[in-house]
Every structure is written in structure tokens, then in C-alpha cells.
Length: 182
Image 1: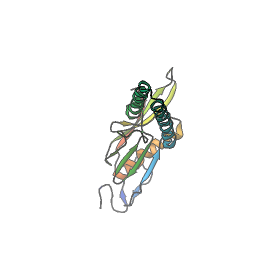
Image 2: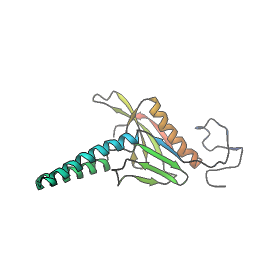
Image 3: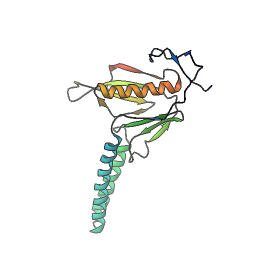
Image 4: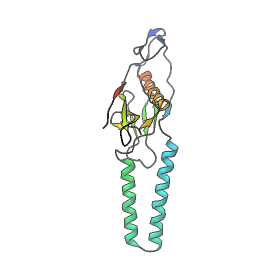
């Protein structure tokens, strides 16, 4: 038997989280959880890249070197933004080989794979100008997802945590009910 798997009829180590009293040793399929639309995130990145490349080509074509330098600096700022702490991941692929975190195609330094036994936590966050909106975000190690709102999005975050728990055969995280504003 592999770690996290048991004989047929064995008690689940995380039976509080799963309503089923017994569990079977099954092969876990690869699942991708979309917290926010990865397509929309990539379209935003594509539009910004197209504008920057278009301005760069135009400034080189018209031989305006000062404009070309300014456009390159704006391109570096955009690259920093998409790889910085302000931009969260929008999808996670859960498989027995590991957890693959997807930020988007411009986040070349942030897209990463994490071990299967990575601990997770779902946080509640108060957002908006007056801090009246209840938002949620998922944290894997030191990676945070984009903040989401609504019960249906919270269920996606819970399903992601449940999938990580089921691969490991034990609870690997929890939900923090108290609002945390980091």
C-alpha cells in the first residue's frame, strides 16, 4: 500500500471532514481547480503585453530611443507586477506527483510545483473601502490565490482543500473563520 491509502473498510484518518465512514484504496486522478478564470488572467496579461510590444515597435520604427527606453521600463514594471506579491494564483492542479500552482503565462517566476504534503489554509478577509465585503483566499505554503467573494467560490476553495487532504489521507489544513487582513 502507498502512504495515505489503507485496506478496504479501514477508518478514514480524516473522518470528520468526509461523511463516508470507510474508504477504499483508489488511484487519485489529476484534478485542476479554477479559483478565478485562468483564461481571463492570461487575456489581461496578453493585452498588456500587446500594448507594450506595439509601443516598443512603434518607438523603434520612428527611431525614438527615449520612448523605447521608457516602454522597456514599463514592460519591466508589468513583469514585476505579475510576479510580485500583489498578484495571486488562479488555478491549482492536484495530483499524486504534487501541486502545480498556476499564476498565468507572464508570471514566469511564480508558476511552481509544490509537494503533495503542503499545508493549506483558507482565510476570511474583509475587503472594500469600508471593509464590509467578505472575501476569501486560499494559501499554500507562501503562495496566496486571488481573493474571491461568494459561497460558490468558497466551496471551490473547500473542494481544493479536500482534494489535498484525500491525496494525503489525513487533514493538511483548515479554515480560519476569523477575518485576517494581511
